[in-house]
Image (cartoon, rainbow, N blue to C red; front, side, top):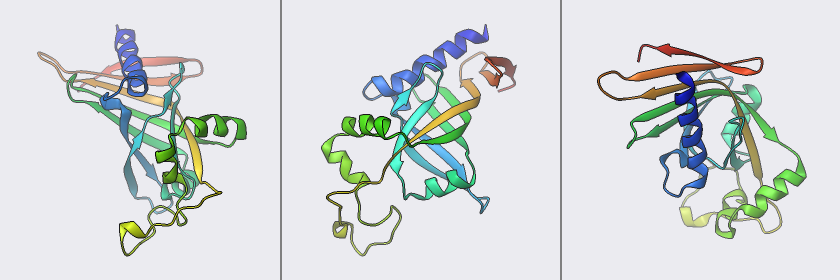
Length: 181
């Protein structure tokens, strides 16, 4: 029975990449660095593999990259308001350094979006005015991060009973159990 919920969450995650306007297109990523403070930010979901590895892009100089070097464990949160579905994922982040893969993804980034990875200073740097950001012409800080889940929680708000299922990766399969919502 839990396999039906796993199939549903898998399909919805994949729709986050393929369907325009799907609420899973954007998710919350949580990292915790050496300062032991949870940092959350909204991220754009770029790819979901058949094995449910999730991919996003970022600037290699961003604070989240420092956190990922300090602690590869991350949390992801997706919410679908129409379906009243929440997906929580715990996983391990890996930076993709393969230049061929990077070039493949970089070529898929629209020209207007490429500037997000070419600022002269790192994200989070103070500026006196938003119009005073300089961009690099011949350099980028484009980075690909892939999350491999080891725990997924599915929560469906419905009556008469909410449904909550935890999936934990074991060697080569997802073990599942129902939880009190």
